[in-house]
Image (tube, rainbow, N blue to C red; front, top):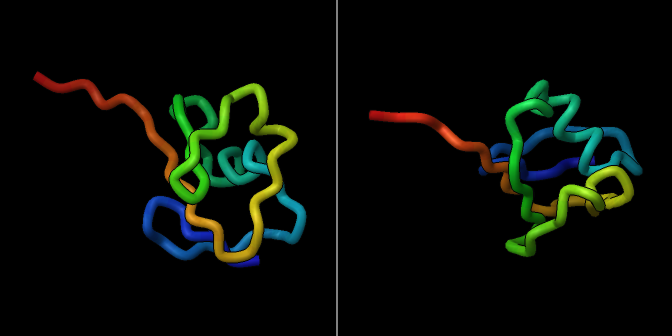
Length: 66
């Protein structure tokens, strides 16, 4: 299944959850917010939310600066 993650097309197994997408990308410890098709998905729902083919996922994290 193809998903657009932060503007890049990525392939995942059918039925993958949002939590699994984040884990497979190796950024589980950094992500603080997620939106699918411009709708925020609360963190407590990540493990049960299953994106559909072609969904656009935006994963956000804080970046420190000076």
